[in-house]
Image (cartoon, rainbow, N blue to C red; front, side):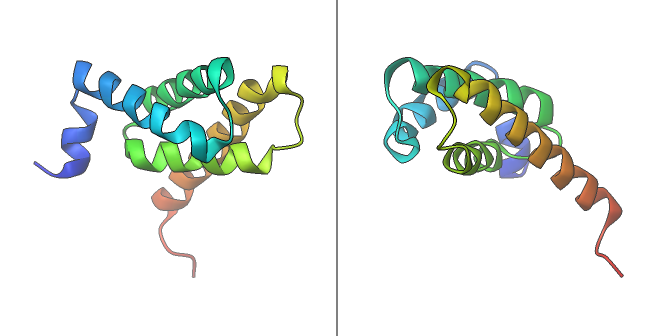
Length: 103
């Protein structure tokens, strides 16, 4: 079983891992409190949707990158905007991997 397979089948362990990763990531995201919890929820939803094509680490990295790119967005809309951008990036990444290397 590969690390990717283990990551995909963790169940309750995965939830605990996501929450632990998110608490560690609060500083990296530059957010705290409710926003960090909202971004943790975004990360969990995205991982649930993209676990067949991305590891948890890849989803966390995508969410972090999107959070930095959306640094100018108003606080209340930040989690939604991060989720939309990360969802698009993960979808694009999956499409590119299915198409293979460009000619």
